Length: 477
Ligand code: BG6
Image 1 (cartoon, protein in one colour):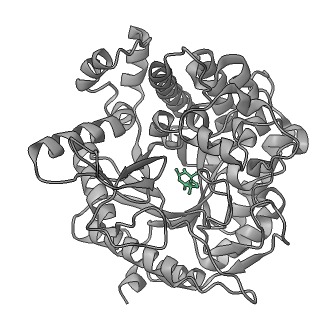
Image 2 (cartoon, rainbow, N blue to C red; image 1 turned 60 degrees about the horizontal axis):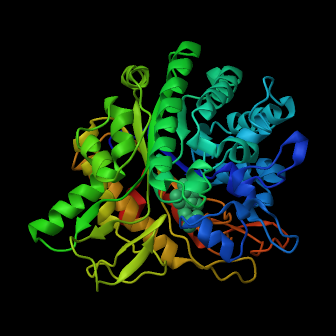
């Protein structure tokens, strides 16, 4: 790799999925803590959520409340990560640990103290923290009172939270990602924006309005952060993955272009500081009524991002007329099955070359440093006598990392780093189950939180260790 010394190799997790201990030290529940494991979760994941989601039933299991116990195990987890050789680790801060209802003026010191300890531990091993401020999580009080990001009031509350965190940890964190996968508010609005739908509400307008509020909060966070410490770097973060046309029929190609533009809408605004031209026609066509005032436009224009980070799991595929074509699930929505991609062990289609294509696409469009902050395969593992022989995960990582290296070395793309998603097994967002495992570190825990919670190294741990030690070369062996 060209950037040998500076390339960031690491892993990523989110507070909502790994910390657990959801009421510890004065924390209060978040939207994520109300996602049950049963079929109501699927409704929440795929749009038709109702307010009844907030009515808890005694018998239900809520994976966000237990995570993988990272809150208590972060020290030994970081020791393991250091053995793996990572030089960076992405985690998110739980808003509800710092401001339990979201409306307090003064932060919860015990909540800040947890992240102070976590940062100290990372510093002890010289692992650089990459920090997300909002990863599918906001205090549930804000969902109940304001319908989450649907309400402009939440912008100020978030900026107060962001400023507090940035002021507290200012010279200890360089790379900040204010929002995880902002485009997810269009696919999984309860998770991405704390939005609940009710009969008669204009759902699509609420989703785009929530996206606009997040864009504003993102820009105001950047503005505040740059005053606190000019060295801070801020990133857009999107759920990426090239959208292919199902055929070379120009109608399919145009459909793919349109879908892609919608997917890149928020990162376009974060990079260019303004909404793309097509968006006003889009609003008319979809009867969107949005409040985007002139002052907002100035804020967006003046506070754009320094880098573009993204998650990549697979590509997507679309056609002008999709009826009768097989569909397949992907991250947050479903798409046409791509007949050219071989079957993999994941329910999502693997497309390693798609990563190189996506890197090229984002580079051509944005000309900003790119950062892969999530990539991995979520699937069942067999655990026996302390071991997991996950050759399928090794294969997935190998092929994706090869394409990353080729994008850097042959296509000349500026990539800050590569972070594997769910490096320590954690409950999945879409399924809520830890048995959809992503890690190179196995957690002895089942979907309803039985188990010792002990950590074990999978075969893929040793593979990734070699990849890191050789700066990617081992992927070609
Ligand atoms: C990304 C999220 O969308 O995909 C992660 O940022 C999530 O939080 C990951 O875990 C994988 O999705 P899932 O549904 O398998 O957990």
